[in-house]
Amino acid sequence: MDFQNKAFQTSLTDNIDYPEFCLKASLDYSIFRDFRRNEIYRIALEHDSFEQGLEYLEATKKSSSNVLSKINEFLKNDQIGNPEVFDYDGIGTIAPPTLRYIKILSDLESEFGTLDNVNICEIGVGYGGMCRIINSYFKVKTYTLVDLKPVLMLAQRYLDHYPLNTTLIYKTMNELSKENYDLVISNYAFTEIRREVQDIYLEKVLLSATKGYITYNEINPEDFHSYTKEELIQLIPQIRVNPEVGILHPKDCTLVW
Image (cartoon, rainbow, N blue to C red; front, side):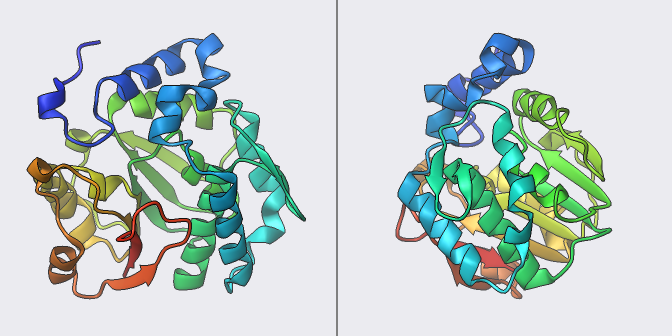
């Protein structure tokens, strides 16, 4: 498949190697069964360390959320894709990125309470792990996954292994129509794209969303001209800036409204 030249990439992961691998993994079972071990994929998504996983776990334990009551359900996330897993006391064998998703779920419950019967949009979906974690805990009404087409194909193959009590909707950026979502989520992805693409997501999703949770970083090339935290607060004044754990860069944080 002929993807965009790197000079025109829309995001840090829109770099030919990552979407091309996602396409191959979505179509070929011999690749799909171990996709979370692949070096290209690990650089993009499966790079959290044991120590970072421990930070996510400790933050979850300290939160007001009760999500760890469903840990046996969350462990099922790692039955697909053969991720690198570690043993954590009192939890079991689990991949650090899965602990990150659980930590985000605990943040969502602590910030917003129940997500039953809400309409969620996630921008940048990885393999669908966050979607699966949320939907194994809450009974979400609809869950819209937005990403590049090859990434969506891989996420759909992954999520099709699990029965979910929601309606899943897969959309690329240009397939999205403007909607009033109850909650928009983006785990670094929104802050890793070009400003002109961010503008599309702001117009179609973020500015009209009732609630939001964005994991924020500042690692883009200068030519992306991506929105800074301060600029986003100007656009969405109700944003609260919360510290993040397991950070890779000093400016990492979460933006919540």
